[in-house]
Length: 267
Ligand SMILES: NC(=O)C1=CN([C@@H]2O[C@H](COP(=O)(O)OP(=O)(O)OC[C@H]3O[C@@H](n4cnc5c(N)ncnc54)[C@H](O)[C@@H]3O)[C@@H](O)[C@H]2O)C=CC1
Ligand SMILES: O=C(O)[C@@H]1CCC=N1
Image (tube, rainbow, N blue to C red; front, side, top):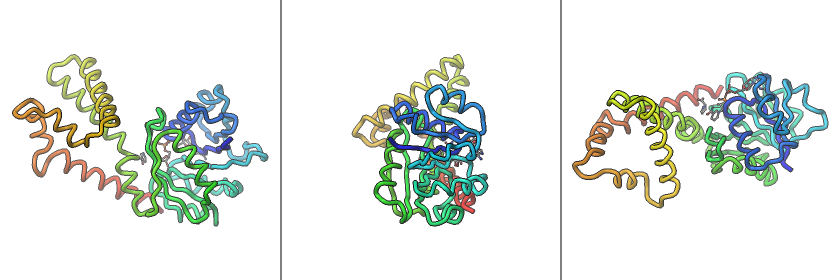
């Protein structure tokens, strides 16, 4: 049984925890520290132990993995109280915070810096990880078990890539949800009843995601397959792909902004 101490059960922590439970990871081995009441109400009945503070964690509980899932801005204040769990591995999911930051707070311990995303809640996430030299095969395997329970996992060696990873896959679900949002609004402006427009946008994003995940074709080819020469899609794409002011340029700017913000959060 993998024993997990989850610190912070907000949007991302709860998404991962929901995925673990759905996957059959034994809730008896999971302890959550979360001062907000909602986690206790949601996950307590599922067999997870939820406490308010680190002081309330049973002294005998020795986690294999301590998942640090509080906001980057409070990490420096929160993480040091977990230093006694140094025999396990600390798995941080905080945007921006480098491995060296945790080494500064916790000492010479095993640290994995990971970037998951919220589709983890339905086990369709993707997490990118980088480990320090103290992470041995067993600790890495313990992290792998948790992360692959909620989606795909990729390990990289170059920590310098993590802010760009965060900008693409960590924040990325928000871009896709924004797409659904603006498509629905545009549909309503085009005269559709808002409810129907919302339903069409959601189903289209969902169905396109399914096709993307199941097809051997590239996203570019799947786009081309929709686009009849001289047809309706071509008319729309002429707007979305307009030279110098299209979706591609906007996305470049958005990803660059998110990457910059990750670097700002590092300290
Ligand atoms: N939301 C997302 O899509 C993603 C978030 N992340 C990272 O996950 C971390 C958490 O982000 P969210 O879940 O979005 O934020 P959130 O604000 O929803 O969750 C943070 C949780 O930490 C709790 N908390 C605050 N102080 C605490 C303490 N001393 N001990 C234990 N729990 C405490 C809060 O009550 C809250 O429930 C951040 O570091 C963020 O960078 C990473 C990937 C994606
Ligand atoms: O917005 C954020 O900072 C976090 C990290 C990636 C997704 N949400």
